[in-house]
Length: 160
Image (cartoon, rainbow, N blue to C red; front, side, top):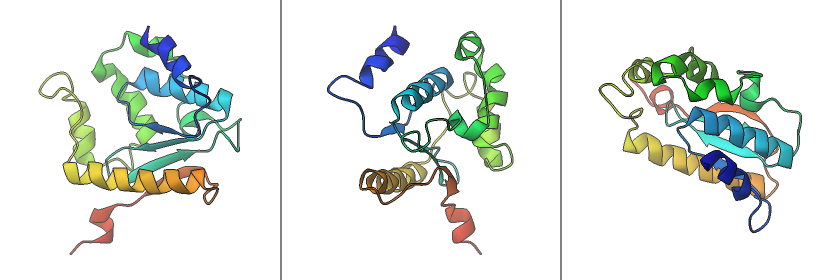
């Protein structure tokens, strides 16, 4: 079972210092965070939309709610049988319906119908990778202690 195997991932070879979430599976995202919280492992996630990055410092704040409390007490077993369309309300709670780009929200409704997964521009992925790497480095060096959601939105920073 992939979900049980993920628990071993956290400890085989020693406890992880940092978890970088690049998984598209909502159930796995929840289970990973619960395990990271139990073990005191910080989590960093980039969404490739508007340069949004989430930092959850479970190492410093073990009682921090997953996803900043945006989907408290959501049972991952409830998600397993849902269609992609039925998962959209939960995804929007996590990413923030008001802050997620309108194009990305529209694409969520097309997953499994006209597209296999949500579209990501190479430039957004590279930007997210750079931001995630920088944040991860600073966490591991003890130079960044915050939890929260941050945006490096190039459309806002550089525009006509």
